[in-house]
Structure formats: structure tokens, C-alpha cells
Length: 182
Image (cartoon, rainbow, N blue to C red; front, side, top):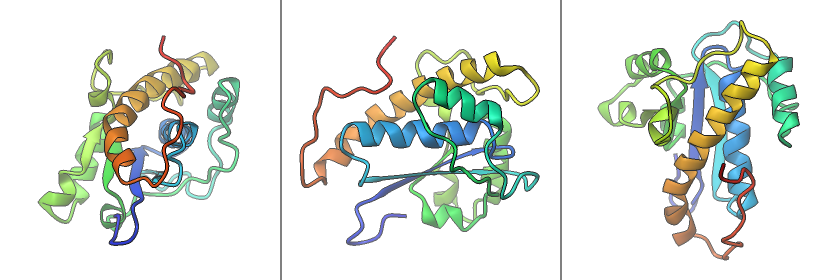
């Protein structure tokens, strides 16, 4: 969590194995912050609820989908969510309802549980509460899921951006939008 003297806002995205959805969200959210000069104010990380893929790179289809849209997910290494992550983050974003339930069960305190939110809750155009898992689908599903994540991350970032700017020492360009509205 942000500490006195550290004005970094910390967000962690959580999915099942940390190789598909949450790495996408981590990269997209970081890109949004960097594109408007707030990269030094935001730390974006990700984790999985399970340990199946710890230490592995993101799924190749994730890396390829990200690359097709101009993002770099090649350095990602999967990790498992740890209850200590609650104290280290200001916001914990679950990619689906199952992840949210797991995270709520792991939360040591009510204040920690209150940090957990569904990513789709930030997107007024979301079709449902869950960002679907593309793992058992083809590359086109990874592109579809990335589009959902971009829209939701954009909405989340827009909600956080005014607060991030109030504690920033410099004013980046206000017209930058790397994902562009549809």
C-alpha cells in the first residue's frame, strides 16, 4: 500500500493462473498510466489464485494478443496471490466472480476485503460480471478478452486519474489516450 512519502497507487489484477487475463490487465493498466505521464504514480501487478503456472511466462496467445495491439507482455512471470498482497496494494481487481470469492475468503480484515472489486464493475458496457477465461479457446477469444479488459481498465483508470493527478508534481498531456475510445 502507499506509505507516507510514497505516492504510488498500487493495483493488483487477479485471475486463475496468472497467464491470460490478469497479465493482460496489468500491462494495459500500466500502459494507460504511462501514456498520460502518470507511470511513476501507478504500480500495476498481477497474480493468480492457483499455483499451477508460477514462474511461467504468460500464455503465448496472451503475449501475441497484447503485441497485436502494441503492448509488451513478454517479460511477465506468473505468481500466486499471497494474503500479504492485501497490505501491499490499494486495490485488488478480480477478473471474475470466482476470483472475487477466493480473494474475499483470503482477506485478513474487512478493510482488506473492501479492496476487492470485479474489473467488469468499472465498465458500464460490460455484458456480465465476469471477464471470460480464454485459456481453452482460440487466439480470437484472446483478442476479444483483451478488448473487454481494455474497456474496463480504461474506465477504472478514468475514475482514478483525477486523484492521481492531484498529487503529481507535473502535468502530463491531458489529451493522450493510447487505447482510444471505440
